[in-house]
Length: 131
Image: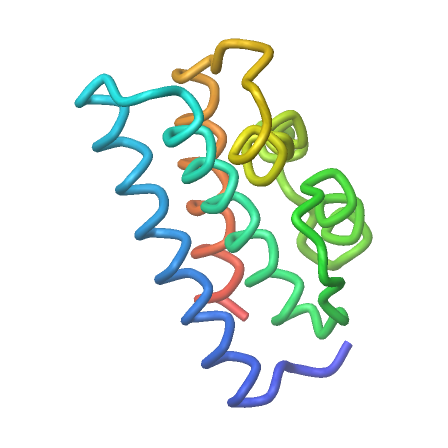
């Protein structure tokens, strides 16, 4: 596999920075006791951007989707498959779009959501900064 271009490295680093911002927001909102849909949204976004950063350095075309299961399936086919904790984060997908606009029909497992975004960001940082 060829190495990512400087532009791809730069874009992957930008996605990591954006994922870190969403991770920080999710943690801060959880501490403040804010509504589940806000915490879930930022946790989902952190995972999505982290996964996309890995796909960028893997030179995989990014689909226009918020579907974490689809993105994680693509990442699983790369040279840097996500760890199990990240693979299991697909359950956050509805929090990124559906629950932002529709009625929330379930409560967020805040601890699991925060663990998923922390694991995704750690994995992505490791991949992006070692590639």
